Length: 113
Length: 115
Image (cartoon, rainbow over all chains, first blue to last red; front, side, top):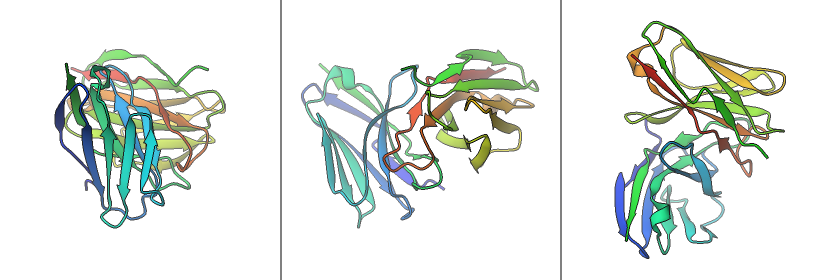
């Protein structure tokens, strides 16, 4: 059972444009939603994270928007740069007694010149 | 401060063999989790250890096992390897269990190829 659905599978954006990646979850017990960035040959690196009591969180060019009622959240990358080209994973977790992340399927982002 | 260290980085094994992968968490981190990453199944949780005890287990067969030592270092073992076990195995560490505000850091992984 896929508990976190992510779209699109791949995305091509021009330099300076906005990249938008969407995720939806089913398990209402999830209460922490991190995004990870993964470059080829590397492990995932935490990019930004949000709790459901917040509708938006911004860190530099990266913003998470969260819609609790719709059980959806999205990552916006403003002023996308070629160095942002990577695979992005949304994830969800039930915080408290476990560190088990449930990941989305990933979005391969390519930022062109 | 050193990150999560995994060894070996690359290895090739034959079907039926077993393999042991090692993970050294960030200093001070007591929770270690393992994930399998494949193109078809994505990132899937294998198990988590905290204070030398398995706290959580994913939906993998019993051929996959792990342990954690008193210094928080962890190993995972896969016995009777199958071709489908070819994957990137990622170790992650965090200071404590649970996630809210508790950043989970990943290592660069061990690439396992089963032939």
